[in-house]
Image 1 (tube, rainbow, N blue to C red):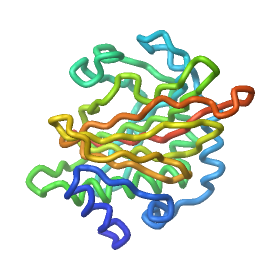
Image 2 (image 1 turned 120 degrees about the vertical axis):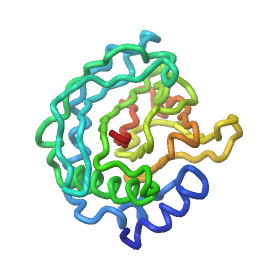
Image 3 (image 1 turned 180 degrees about the horizontal axis):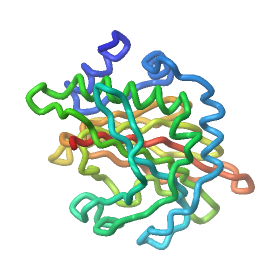
Image 4 (image 1 turned 90 degrees about the horizontal axis):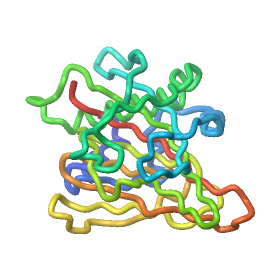
Length: 238
């Protein structure tokens, strides 16, 4: 494991989650380049039409990969599925989202992020339970906030995702307040709260050990566009 990942791995193993500020995250992403171009792709996301609460405040794209010692490869496009045990609001159905574009799937920024996730999550997994390859899902999310309609990053509330590990990486905050991340243990005891503020600020969670959630975002200036862009990467044993 690269030395830049060791403090993150230690925090993740100790607490079940790690808050990583942008400078530390950038140092842990060798090969990261053209982040501005990568972030620009969040302007081209389709509306999530599966919201059971009737909201139209979430935009997204989705892609699936396999990660192993031989590298990272994209899988054929497939639906995102969560059981109602993990997502009482939107779970229980196959959700077909617009695919991540080829240009973004192969973008050096995303490839650097996926490689770092693999290095970290594979290293903190005991050898006896470490898979030959990981099932990886990537989600581009934009949560929009409007006057009188807060945007909900986690409309299902405090939750687990039914995977092994989750990375939530901030891409951009534009004209929004709140959006505080909270972490709770399996007995719902509060472990910590923080707000992802700067691009590349990150929250990393061991999904088997903790719940996580994010408070709704509201516009600071109701006359201007307001949104919170994040990249979510999940790793699950295949």
